[in-house]
Image (cartoon, rainbow, N blue to C red; front, side, top):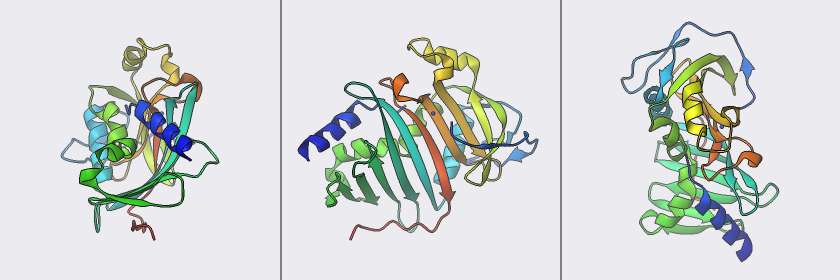
Length: 248
């Protein structure tokens, strides 16, 4: 058991949070997507920038609740590693997050629950340990960068341009798909051994609500793994009946 926990912590330490999915394509729309945080409306068909992506992230974070799936690609000790994360985030009645991390398919998940400043975690044993956030900085650093705020930073905190691809439906949500510009893709990958087509730089924004629906960034397969984390973050539901409670 100690070996499994140690391996997981080694994997988390080497991750550096910086991804597309199966969708149903539709013809591009010409309607404007609602804006968020005072950002001008997104007119589908026009390019957007990182500020607009940030506004879409903020619009999702303003929801009462949402569920998500994440697939991350990182460098392991010998080869690239894919980790899957399934979780829920809530703003009401309390700010909370709950997620299961599966570093190796078939193994028991590593589970993390945070409700305000109370944290419970299970390293795959089936037993939770409770700690206070103020005393768990290392634990927070191991888990929380792989939820929305941490993963979105690389696409939001830079001056990137994203070109429109068209409207698509993801988990019943209609969204406008944008792809990182060719110039930015080439600039990002020129210092790596990857070609632009091996790097995910895609964002999907809901046409009704202007919130983030999906974000893909970085290397997308274990064979292309770098120190930079590659991922695809997908919203599976919004404003859901999905309570987050302490473990029994």
